[in-house]
Length: 112
Length: 112
Image (cartoon, rainbow over all chains, first blue to last red; front, top):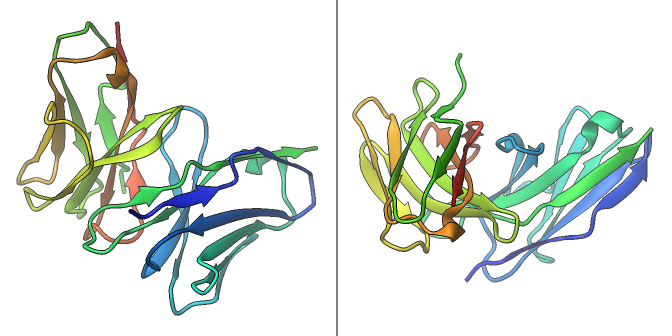
């Protein structure tokens, strides 16, 4: 079955630096991959979706890359701010559709 | 446009009881998915409904069931509650059930 691996250790970075989070998946390559942000006690918030034929996608300070050969996606937050501190979840949809599998998430702490 | 709403927000039940949770999707969204989130297992897919039909389900026992109404509102039911059912239950809506999803605030269920 499809598995998603995200760094279980928290990522601590200094304000202003670039945070880079990794998402690795096994088995098949999905048609697209998504990233969500989740704050404690709240539902995830959709951030970005990248398709298999796209290498990179940007939205403001966010950038996502998708390497289907490595079966990996990287999520970057440039000029990070303390308000970016949250858990970031990677998600994909297996064949057959209508079902989304989420990674365990990586906690990001941005220090002022 | 109003977001996804879930009721109730908090619930305390006793082992053996049953519970019904409700989700109202974003207007125009016909797909509703349900997830269970626990610290140990992360975000786990329960089932997805589109136009009153369940199109996919996760690996949960039959005690977990759901339904969707003609106005796209959805309910999930858990019968014979167990202590391990304590979790944050999230619902998410999307236009077609693929791609980006919009999550509600969740229902925090505690089983004692």
